[in-house]
Length: 586
Image 1 (tube, rainbow, N blue to C red):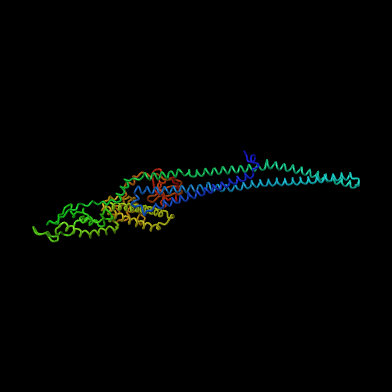
Image 2 (image 1 turned 135 degrees about the horizontal axis):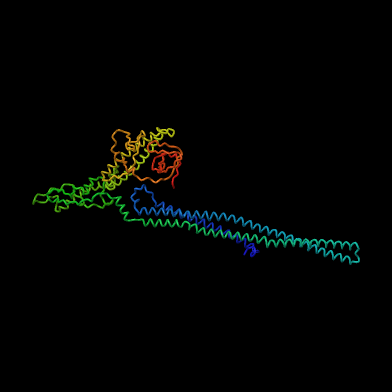
């Protein structure tokens, strides 16, 4: 069913309906815009919430960082941040796919509807013009016909009048004949206008207006279809991110299941274990007897008592709690000498009075209180030392081992850089057109100084770790260093000595290079390369190649201009990166 056939006389209804449809599209666009604003504000609030609670730590050594509950909470915050990103994506897609697209389409159909309505008005105006012409010709025909009738009646009356002359009769007849002729012309014109109007009217109601109404119907149906697609996009936009949102929620669940209370307890133990032994029992010293304090394994002369442990480990704090209640006066032994006992069978000393035990406790309290204040001073202002002696033994060993690992990594970097500089110098010496060897002297000198400095630090921390009872499992490195002259040092693979002096003992500790390096399995290639030029490979560590030769890339360029390659027969070496076309595997 079509509007042009069924609604041929409902122009006003059609115009009102199409206008209402456009307003509905505008209303939906406005609705989606407000929804996107809500999504954006929601995402912003989620991001701010995650940022608020995701406090940046000063470093990875913070005690809480290793706890599974802490890491799980960070994972929850990260997942919430990702979740906020998906809400932002929903808002962005709704704005792009619905709001902007529907707004553009709305402008197009508004212009199209306006065109159709203008065509309808033009057709209506044409029909009205034709009708006016018809009405004008009709009125003229009516007027002229009445005039012709009156002229005919007047001629007939004149002809019957006996007093009228023959001239008057002829004149009246001529007038009647002329009026009849004009009336006939008006009749013919009226008939022509009527035929024209009927034709225009038929065309208007059966061709022009139905066609325009059908176009408006098609426009409205396309609008409804587009609006329906917008409704579907409203749902699909959110459905598209549901899998990722589901993964975010699964990540939060996974973070919760990853919490391990036993592991957290072990981490607390590992981080805070002091390594001290528990203090031994304090012996009772009887001041009422005339005997000297006996020294035994459990007396205060042993390092098991809190006072002796404090004297042996200055800076250590043995209090279990930071806020201590008032100490019992009998917690520590007295440090003052006991009063002289009374003679046998003699009267008691006036110092003791009637209660000997009370006097002893008072003396203990007098000697212990000054030491308690010194304990608090030690606790409040510990001295941080380079060898970490301010820490308990277990924590000191861990700190020293961590420091050794860091120094070993830095030393390995300097050794690699020294090796690369030496190779570059050899290449420059054999191929002067590639560069000046003297330009590398300052870099080689600086690198050598850094190596010696790191080796000295490594030796120092090795000694401290040995004193602390650690194993000293430092990272091993390849000691292919070069001296200031660019030649191999005492530990280079070719065994050439650059100095006749006795090597430093610290170097013998750290520079480990054994046969295991040669027995390593061949590394998997990370790419291929094709030689663009011939390269002789005459210096140590390099490999020759011919133009067009294909090689496997084993180690990429680390910024020194050299790439490590391998032939099919297993030969490996370095080549200038600029001498080959390199393709890395993905």
